[in-house]
Length: 354
View (cartoon, rainbow, N blue to C red):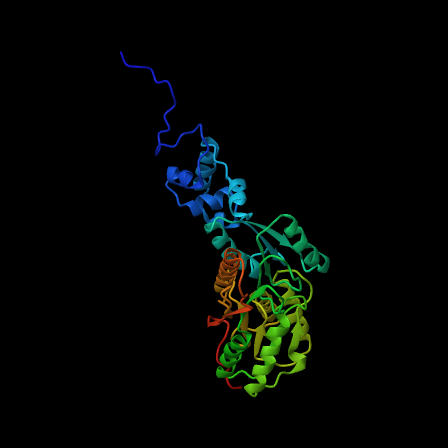
């Protein structure tokens, strides 16, 4: 007579359900990579691209197999919290989100968690957040497009930071090269009456980028008409900011055949304002953006833009920070310069002679 089963069979890769399992074992049990399981467990925004069925499987298996991250033991052993603080102006679909994507990809793959704080350009929060993160015993900080003046006892890396601060590594774009790419492209197409949309005052890149444009224009023999320069207002990360300043620009009735915007979001708003005023893009006005956010390629027409490799910049920031944490001592690299790229799509065209 066959014996009656006395215990529950795991049914998969020898995982016992009465004992906690590691992330690696949980991933093996599911037939997934540890990185995928970590993204789901930690509710990362990157996990949005993972099928819901897969996420449900991961969370169900984690509960069933009693998965518990053992960060306390690892922290005692290494004297690290394996946690990083990230400070951003805001989280939207544009610049900050793409930088964050690169940061979190690398941190999660390396087994680090992170806290994100959004300051919305408030000076008091920019000053308070570093101390709050120190109180949470983070191993290091990454500040994205945030003015940085703090001299902290932990490693700090900034993305688009331009202040030279002790112990801080700045990841920055080569703005002279970026200005050269955009202006030469427009000049080669025959445009000399160019309007400009400057970024908001609070952005770390605004003055650096504008100074590069002015310098390159002088070198190329291009006169900048002050009446064709407008600046973004407000802190809304939406195309409306570009739409509003372009309407003001059009009200001056100063003629221009091209427009160079400080970011893609404002360029998208500018295109709508131009269309509403009966101007065709690029037939009447060529438009160049800046950043190459994900929506730039899907804009109709596709937006010509200066690409900042934002995800790459985020990844380099995370890599640099973890290298400094692991090294613990030694000289600090003050700056890492990233090269831009011109992406030509459908919003620029050769100027037809009148």
